[in-house]
Amino acid sequence: MWVQRVIDATGWEPLGLSVDWATVEGELGVPLPADYKELCEAFGGGVFSDTVSFLGRSEGASFDFLTQWRASLSFDQSWLGDVSAFDPHAVYAPGGKGLLHWGSTEWADEYAWLVDAERPGAYPILARSHDPGPWVRYDMSTSEFLYRVLADADFRPFGIAQYELGTTFQPGLGGHVDGPPL
Figure 1 (cartoon, helix red, strand yellow):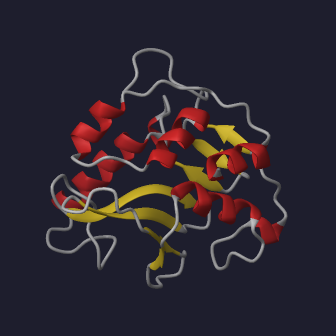
Figure 2: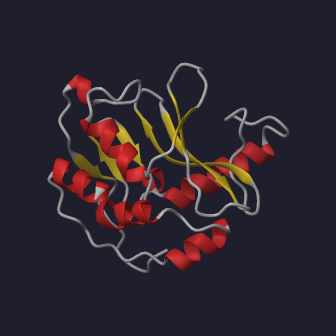
């Protein structure tokens, strides 16, 4: 229902991408939310309303979920030691508990799931605005959160509809992946 609302709001023609979710989820060690996978298959990765970056499946590293996760995990573990760039949370590592980022804004707002390998299937969304404020928890699906960010002028502080930017989607670097799926 919410995925279709995002599609309708943007006027996007779903790509129908084929993604090897078993491989993706095998690397992560947890299943991803079903509606997120639908969003990825419909949109790939890219930018909504010239403002909201969505990490999905994209031929360019900038919008590819796994590429960005690997980079964040490496940085969080290699450079920061016991401190995380996403304090008080760490980047999710297989078998553990932490954040899996799936979106952001040009204003440096961040959107992630708080994932716990011991509780697969629970995907609360944590969002943080550009100022160094606390993470805000949302118990809703990824697609509902994304829809509210894009189309609900009263969804504050993360909604962008109040700025009347339009609800569009621009695929990242070529729009989709030609070749073998992830």
